[in-house]
Amino acid sequence: MLKALTADFKIIFDRDPAARKWLEVLFCYPGLQALVLHRFAHWLYGWGLPFVPRFISHLARFFTGIEIHPGATIGIGVFIDHGMGVVIGETAIVGDYALIYQGVTLGGTGKESGKRHPTLGENVIVGAGAKVLGNLQIGNNVRIGAGSVVLRDVPADCTVVGVPGRIVFRSGERVEPLEHGRLPDSEAQVIRALVDRIESLEQQLQLVQTRQSLAVCYAMAAVNPEEAFQNPTSLNSPTNGTDAPLPKCQLSNRVIDEFLDGAGI
Image (cartoon, rainbow, N blue to C red; front, top):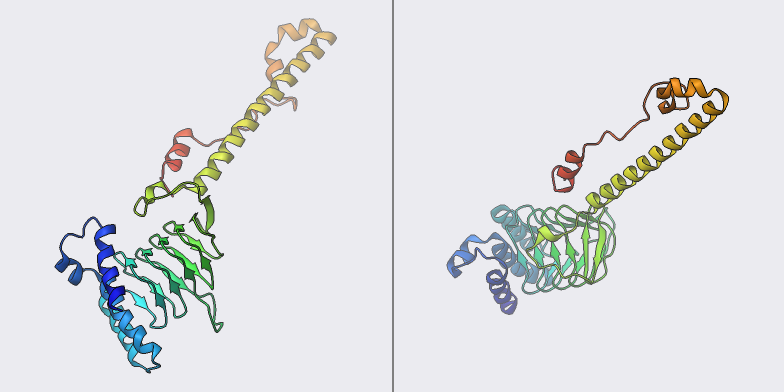
C-alpha cells in the first residue's frame, strides 16, 4: 500500500503542471485524498470487514466528490485529476498509471452479478465526462475522448471518441496525455464528407441541366429554327415547362466552416 501511495503522489507532479508544492498536493488534491481513503477501505474490504469499508468510501465521496467502491481494484500511479463526479464501480479494475478526469463513470449496465464493470489496462486516459459501461476490456495505452460513451471492448493503442465510442486511431499516432485538442472529431469528418458529396451531386445536376437545355435547343432548332432563336430564354428553362429553378443546397459555407471548427460540437 505504501508503494502505491508513493507512486500516486509522485505521478501528480509529472502530469499536472499546476502541481508545485508537496504540501499543496497533499492537502488540496481530492484525487489523491480519494485514493488514500480507497486503498485503506479496499484493504479492509479484502479482509471481509462489514460496513466500515463502505462507510470510508462514503466519507471519501462526501469530502472529495469521488465515489470509489471499496471492492474496486486500483493500480499504482493512478491520477484522478480534479475528480468531481468520478464513479468507479465495485468490480472495476484500473491499471497502473491511468489518468482519469472529472465526471468519468466506470459503471455497469444492469443488475447482473459477477464481473460487471470495466477493466482498464495500463496508461489508459479517460477524458472528462466519458462513460465506460459494462464488463469491458480496455487495452493498454488507450485514449478515450471527453464525453465519449464506450460500450464495447477496445484493443490496445487505440483512440476512441464519440457516442457511442468509435475507434479513430489504431497504434499509429501517439497522443500525449494532456493534448485533448488533438483528438479527432469523427462527427465533423462525416459531415464534411456529406457536404462534399452534396457539392459533387450539385455539379452533376448542373451538368445534366446543361445537357437537357442543349437537347431542347437542338430539338426546337430542328422543328422551328426561327422560334428557337427569337426566344432563347426558353432554352434555359427546366424540362418540366416551369420557370422554377432546380433545388440547391441551402447550407452556408460560413455555417459549415464554423461547425467544423468546433461551434456546436
